[in-house]
Image (cartoon, rainbow, N blue to C red; front, side, top):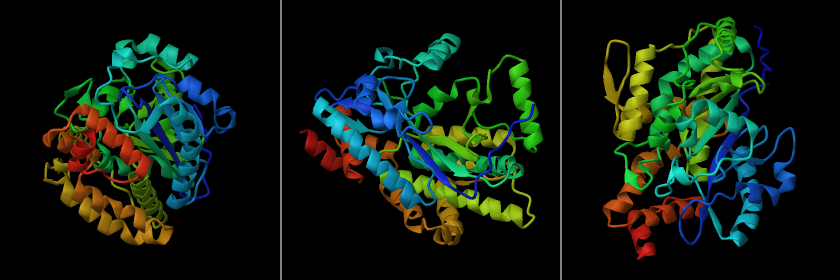
Length: 388
């Protein structure tokens, strides 16, 4: 089975950001995506590349950038779409936010989007699909040749815990503290073709594996393979899908910078004849779980002999390593936001800190709305005082 990879000109960027529609009065999710999209036909009805579109649940709209070359360009693209989106939702009493799950809304109240493929997904997956009231961010980075795609996917698998821990934002599920940094990773990861990527040898092996899944009836097309990191042949990109919902554009820019810098580094190493690292599958799975459970406090496995190190230390070291690459491609400032997250807390930590100060889950929702609107972190005391 031949799969054409539409190679990109370089490490271009595309970002997909899934946003919550929240009732400004009750703090509950609003199932109004159809109405919102209908009010923005110039953004949502473009056939080839809509700027805003449905996701599986009516509580969600997804905003999408065009093909960008820098992180700054991608952030500006998102900001322009958000500005138009606000002009429609705010008069309707709807606020926007983004965390991996909504802290208080019950997934059983969700309404499916009127899209045939989503109805087919629910029919096939049943409860697994009906509860997917989750929110994430996907980053596409262009790759110049299909021969590079699979080695880069393998190498990026080492960084699943890094991507997840920095963006983990779903400690709460239907009003309960799950004890996890990312409950979304569990909810979404339960789908049979989701989870860590299969570590393959080359593009030919990827083509054969996809053909096998189709012959077996596991999937009907390769678009139904929802790995945490996957090649996207139509776009000529690597799609990093590991991230939880991200509350601020600053943090979206941070992960975009990390993704673009890593792919650029690996691309250059391949050009120099290096063989990229390919971690053992058990290490990838174990490290993903550690980040799911403990977030930035995870102690991750660093080699196939079982050596470990604190993830925070690994992140500091990674940022130092990537600084020259980020500087060359123009995203050094965005990459520095990693240090702010390490110092001030990832979203799951900021949310729990509000509760620790005596705030309610409604205060947590309000803080996430403020973070999204003002593109900054809200301190626990500010959130509690605002809700008093």
